[in-house]
Amino acid sequence: MAVMDTNIPDIRAVAAPLTEASLCTWLGAAAPGDSITYHRGALARQVCPQLQCLPENERTALQRLAARAWKLAELGLADIVQRRHGYEDYAYILVARRRPRRAASAILPLLLAEAA
Image 1 (tube, rainbow, N blue to C red):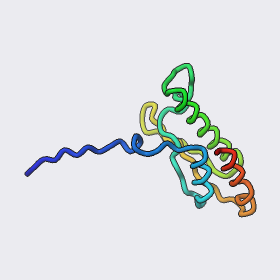
Image 2: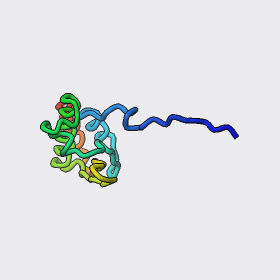
Image 3: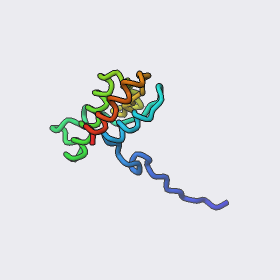
């Protein structure tokens, strides 16, 4: 029996980082209850400039993404859920909420334009 070495890449390293615009686009197409993990790690530590956990451009992008998710939750369009996987390993999840059609058609394009 031959042994095959298969390199399985870390999916987080392969996937393109989520952006504010892609988060808003996802929410615009999401059904109530759909969810998306917008970050995995220790968000508070990773966005802290003094700790320098991430390069400045990545840290800034992550801060903007987290702020966008928070704004979507404040507007009542989604809920934010955190799931702990281990030490400093959390999944930050945005869950789409049910919304009136009129509100969705008016506000989501504005949010997408603002995020772009």
